[in-house]
Length: 434
Image (tube, rainbow, N blue to C red; front, side):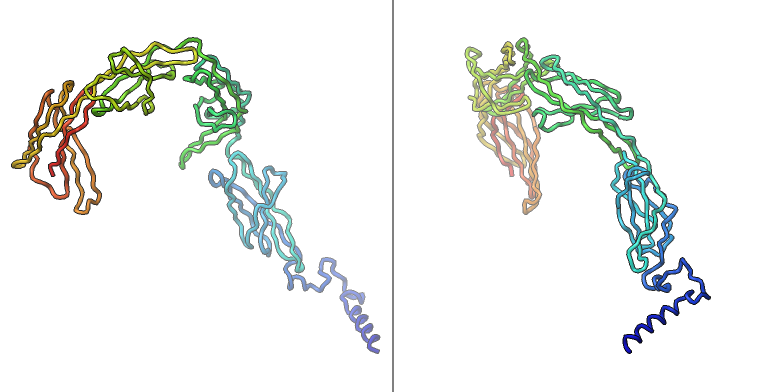
């Protein structure tokens, strides 16, 4: 009986379906679950967004807008670079969102967007159809890289570059240069004008290898400043300058002056517009009868030579050279470091300083009196010093007087004397006033 009762219920339920008794027609569009899907899991279909637009919103940003037409749980945005695609998922945004800002874009690339609603249909995840496609064009037309770069060493100091200009919208070309071969670091060498196809790299050393790349550049100025865009670089090319055919000219000049009683400062200058060759420094302490090669410390044309004997003349000369040989020596630059004075006494009477020293030099061109002043506070916090030249005295001077005033709290006052020679000076003899 229980099994027959179940069958009876099943048959009865079938007899109660709408339209099955021949009096009520079946609606083809009505859900066969009796219309419960909308109540349980949302609408029977999602309506696509409409009215999609895309617009520039700054150098590298686009803003996308659309109309929300559905009871969605969110939206999926897809992006491509052409209206025909392909499109890939860019992001998902929350329900009821109608605007999205897409940033970090390449100004040389166009972008297209389409949007679809995401939600539940009959308790199952579902998508609407896509909106219309909205695009923003590229802000800047791409700059095509130059090509066919060549490098030819036309002399021992010059390499000429040529390339093919493949772009119509560059504002300049950047030439980069490596001293360390094809795999070395390339640094900015020069900027060439738009439409340029050649550049000469001059001032090079003989028998030196140089590598180059060239790329096109676009510069755009806006209210936020200038923005630069570069093409890809050309292939790397290299060239080696040939060896020299003759020794360099004798165009070095050397000057010498005392930096103290046992030290000499040298300044070496190349006097021609052509590249300066390598050089050697020679010294003589016997009036040029014998010259010895020295390697004093220094750079960029400034060098220090010590120890030297005070009151003894010392001369220097420069010999330039290259792979073809040595230049003639430069004219000598000579000086005599003067002996330092010796302080005999320093006395302050009635706020007046009197300095007395012994003149120990026979070559000085005079004496200089300097003062060094220091100032701070009782804790020596923020202490600072500065000095200035007080006076210049004639040769053989041995004394100097000056009013200094009373001591000032939290200050220091020191006077010192030096002998002058050839624009330099001897060691000093000093006296602390307070």
